[in-house]
Length: 117
Image (cartoon, rainbow, N blue to C red; front, side, top):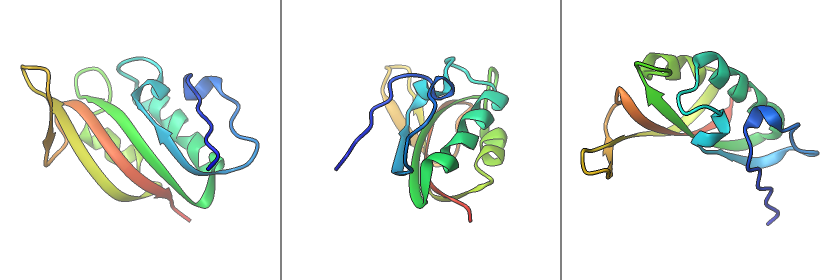
């Protein structure tokens, strides 16, 4: 399969020539370590334009209630998407990432979604 690797913040890239089947966006795509809700919204608003109507978004977004995005803001950010799966991870004191059943105050959310028609 054809793969396009973009190793820069989403806001710095003009987008694909043709829509993708999938977009995998990792935390650095959002720019600063603790993106604001407005930066995350601007980033997420680009993805439907880059995807085919049946395209898949796999998103890893940092959570930090004190400095950026918490569970409530995340729910608002993905409100225009059909979330197929979500998982939340928090780093323990030893540095290992552990899965949680709910969104932590600080950690990572992994979301799989499709554009809402």
